[in-house]
Amino acid sequence: MIKILNIVGARPNFMKVAPLHRAFEQRPEIESKIVHTGQHFDAKMSDVFFEQLQMPKPHYFLGVGGGSHTEVTAKTMLEFEKVLLEEKPDLVLVVGDVNATLACTLVAIKSHIPVAHVEAGLRSGDRAMPEELNRILTDSVAEYLFITEQSGVDNLKREGVPDEKVFFVGNVMIDSLVYYLEKARETSVLEDFGLQKDEYAVVTMHRPANVDTPEGLEAILNIIADTTRYKKVVLPIHPRTANNFKKFGLSEKLAAIEGLILTEPQGYLEFLQLMQNASIIITDSGGIQEETTFLQIPCLTFRDSTERPITVEIGTNQLLADLNPVTVHENLLEILAGKTKKGQIPPLWDGHTSERIADILIEQLGV
Image 1 (spheres, helix red, strand yellow):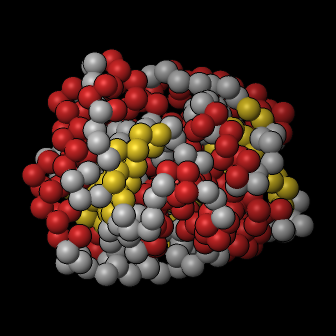
Image 2 (image 1 turned 90 degrees about the horizontal axis):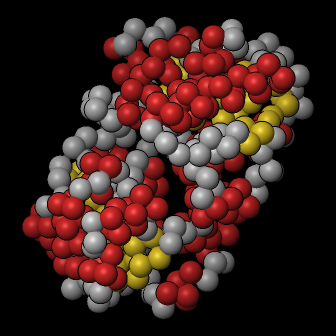
């Protein structure tokens, strides 16, 4: 059997590993175990996802917690090394671009254990983003690189990665979305918030560049207040964002916006239901760009660049370089007037990516 250790750390990882673990368990050739580094340790950001995604309790919980990028990476490496020595896996599988992705990759490679990177090849072109460095470094040493979109293939070719390491398989994030879409419709989140389809916008903000300064938070306040003139706004607030609103004395100003539904982070199913019934999403998230493209929901993303260009090229995503309320207002009015492009679903975003990855790994590892 092939023993695979699947690494999860932050919230987006759970939706990626859940379909992979499910596909692996359906293959008698694979023994699949989950290692949760604990980078997201808040129950709302972690535990509820394991429950809703029907993932088993992690075989290992490293309890890394928060801290600086250096602290999280170093603590993860030290704790994961103990797991490797005990388990001696045939493969370590990492997803995405969080600190746990790079940390566990480095430990595995130094222990001469091959690494598979799911969502490889994505590049924003912005090396000031810690996630960009995590992607580049992980891809430079991983043995199996699984690609979500053509830009990933092109990027790795430019970086000199051999073709035999690269596999264009599609998007595991969409596997979860397809699998749980019907179940999400059974949640009561719309009724709980008194919402109807298309009568509201969803806003999520968490990136340091947007939420770590009072200027950024004031801009977010203005954007939300302006949007509520046309639609209700649902803001599931990230712990980092909530802490900064409090730190800069802006929490009361946020809570006072009429038409704003301010709530804690939602479970995956609840948030999926909110997304698929919204008229627009305003965000700085990476994964939401992909989900809205599949769901055909207009999305405004506050990023200078995106590592998922397919969502802009053929999807429903639009990039806005800064938190400019005037620009948001203009785009919002166009979207509400129905003047946005109708997006296409990218190739192989069909709900079967995890199965393709399982088949490839069985073939490559010689079982």
